[in-house]
Image (cartoon, rainbow, N blue to C red; front, side):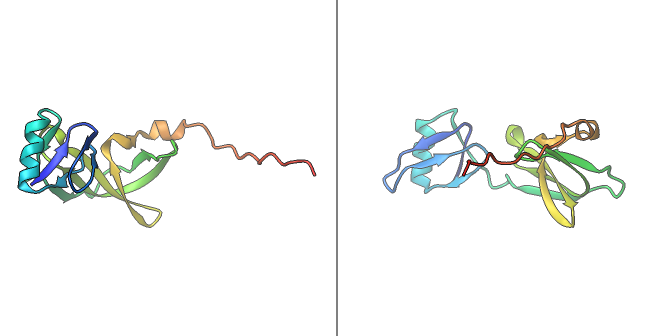
Length: 134
């Protein structure tokens, strides 16, 4: 059975501890899954077989997208190629698959930014390392 945590959770098992993170289903034996569901109600859920990824082509006239990278910079524009829905129900999320600088990128919808945010972001300033006197 596949179990997904609704919040970060450490599960102690005979075979070793495991940390569950929201949005990442983990395969458990039926016995372990039922025990976990009983011991942690409201903290974990059973992932149905229908929870999957649905990918559809983007509209041919879709506007370019901009997104925030892990370092806080906003990049783009990129041409959307596909739209994806991951999961179902209250835990579903959306993604854009785009081509940026010749490579495909998978962009979660919560990282999408506007063109205005892209144009008004602070410029990156290069600094030199402090050098030790000789």
